[in-house]
Image (cartoon, rainbow, N blue to C red):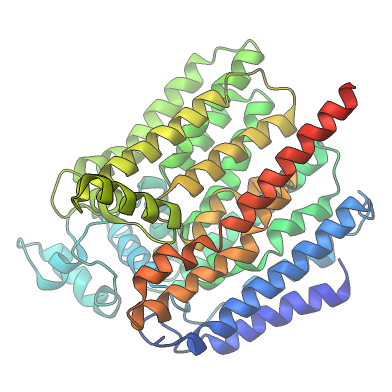
Length: 460
């Protein structure tokens, strides 16, 4: 990687660290509060993407290219965030509370933070935990709801608490280990694809990945090694390892279960019928998900509330809700619920359809997994920037440039905070929220048309 590009990426992260003290969503009242952050993230991501794209298409990257400067750069971009407060986001407070509960042998689904803070239901163990973690407890967003995170995520939170109780740097350390594992698996995939390892910079030195993981500390970072590892294990026909990794991924975020049809297709193509692996996946996934699902039937369930109400940064979803309401003449929650159900069914349908054809090779397998992950993201009613961690590792592995463009466009989400403070929430949801998606979709459509023309020309 060019020393100038590397210096710019490192300097942009240092500048973000300098800007971050006191930068909370409650403190942002106008565009001036977030404009430098949005500009730095988008500009640095654009420079990195243009540089890597130009090097890749000009074949100036080779398998002999030295990777250690790139590895060191990505590591430095992450280390500068240690000992800092995460800017704008507050999800990590929930992680800290859940981790403390798990580490002390208590269920994070038993009581909501609000109940624990007020000592409801006569629970002395939680009263003691609430007392020691009171400064964390009072900062949790939506404290009326229990945890939304499945078992594997909870284990990571618990491990972070054991490393550094009530400290965001404990989370950063655990997540950084997962991030390094993602890089390692990506190196293996690129080797198998006969591609230069330097292409891993598309993930490892990606400013949005660093910001979502090391800066704002989001659990979605844990998915990288698990999803990539599951795909590689499926390609190698290591059925039990594949099942275990997929179950752990489902235990971080539920959506990777949609990769199961694709993995089943890979095994069918290899004439493998791994009964033991299916058993391993079923048991492991049930263990990791059962407590969360069991708690979802209460009125304080975070999972139920998220599934029913969370919607942000998805302009087409907002437009469709408005259209349905106009047609029906009734602004009802049933409109949003219907669209959520349709989104889920559509994502499941894509997962099944994408698994119907025989898999040609590893690139084909990874490309189809990318389609599933990106479909889940772009159909999701809530499209937070850190949700891009669902598909960015796969996009980097196969160099899907249109989806990598999301690293440049998604920082526009942070304009939500000043616009909400100025009473312009509707303008954001109906207008600004399309800015991150439209360029990606346009590039995907252009590439599809171009590929079809090229295919037709080759046939004639």
